[in-house]
Image (cartoon, rainbow, N blue to C red; front, side, top):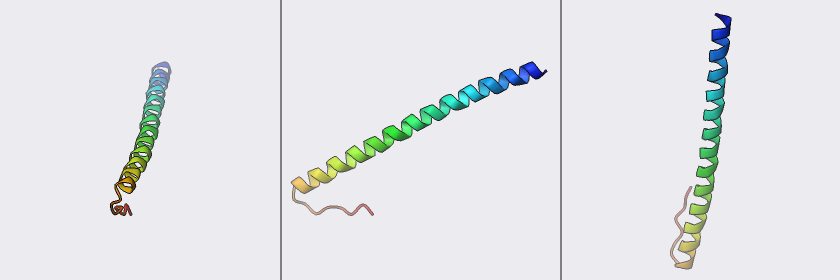
Length: 56
């Protein structure tokens, strides 16, 4: 019995760690996309000499 539960724990931990890595990667990609996208939009608005939209 103990070997089976230990095996399940190891697999569960591995899957949890893999999911954690996937989530962290997705969060970092989303942050980069948001930062680059917002910066480029603000530059575009400034170049077009239009009123900036307040984001906050």
